[in-house]
Image (tube, rainbow, N blue to C red):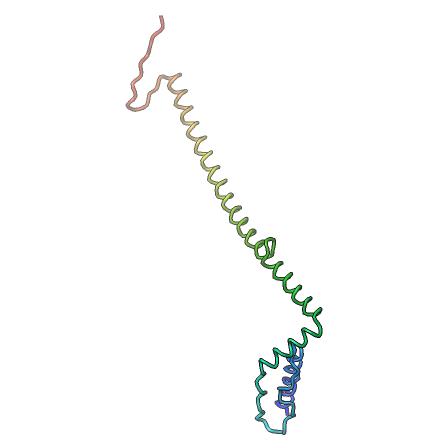
Length: 148
């Protein structure tokens, strides 16, 4: 019994679906179950008949199909257009990658500036040592000129 009820619900849903896409559902097996657990599968839908039904429906209600096509076009444009969602997601991903690259470059700049400061400090220390204390580096020759 449960199987029969499930099958009848499935048939009703298929008929509603066929009706929604323009079919009349006549190709479905409309007879209810005879109490057999084995049911006949629904007959295949004739594509040519479905296409003809769709043409008749379009001719009889063109405004509905025009609105459907217009909405589909707008949705596709919103997704894939120049300012669409897909393009925006690409740009956001690119922006994030550039931001991370910028952060890495800023970190490297700070490291280089610290290194420059360190080198300048050592050079400054060496200069003061040479002037005040007459110290030299290894391998360096110093000439002392005495004033008269």
